[in-house]
Every structure is written in structure tokens, then in C-alpha cells.
Image (cartoon, rainbow, N blue to C red):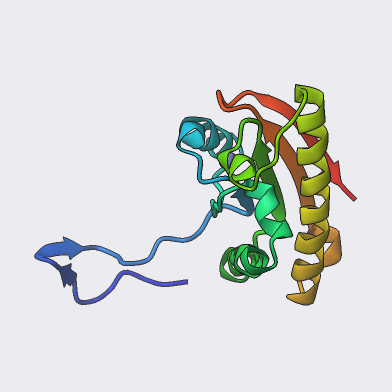
Length: 161
Ligand SMILES: [Zn+2]
């Protein structure tokens, strides 16, 4: 879209040949802020050709809190408007500090995964509705829910209707 600038752009003493780079990612990985997941999230993003990567404490659970939900949805809609991103991965993880802070305790790993799955499925419904409201083409929208453990191993990945 843009040719090279005719006059070099200098910023903080550094000459730039260009100040724009096209977006190549068409995915969003929405996850938790958890520091233990950084490497696993980066690996997942690289495997999927890049991704916008917003994060809020709780990952998918952030969509269930009314205040956090509007922020979370606004980031996904922004990625759609900026680069046409319509493939959305909603990620939560076991041993999540946000659930602990909310006083949620689990009796078993199975119970924990069930709860994360239920929360992610609800989040996926909000995300789909927000993208449709932002005029994203319905047939291009693909929403996946993903559960990983704190070591970054994938426990579940499911496409949502
Ligand atoms: Zn977490």
C-alpha cells in the first residue's frame, strides 16, 4: 500500500527506511497474564503464523466479569478492525491465580478442567456476538477454546460452534 518514504524518517537519531510494516497475523490468542505461560504462548503463536495477544488475569474467565468483559471484547474487536483477525483462541490454564484470588477451589483436576471449559464456552459466545456486532463475516469467524497447564502443555483444544 505504501511506497518507501521519499524523505528518511529520523526518530531518536535513528534513520528508518519505513515506519510501517504490514500485519501478517489473522489470529488472536487471548490468554492469562501468568508469567509461567510466556514461552508456551509464544510457541503457540509462532506455530499459528503470529497472533494478536491480549491478556487479562484469568484468561477466558475475564469474559465472565462484566467490567473485564468489555475490555477483553474491545481488544478482540480491535484485532479484527486492525488486521481482519477472525480466528480466535481463548485460553485458560489450570492452577490459575485469578481463580484462587476469586476464592475458587477445585477438588480434582477433572473438576478444574470442567469449570475452565464451561467458562471458556461462555466466553466464546460473547466473543462471537461481539465480532458479529462489529460486522465480521460470520462464516470467517472461528473460535477455539484451549486449556493448558502451568507448564504450557495443552490439555484441550476445541472449536466452538
Ligand atoms: Zn492465570
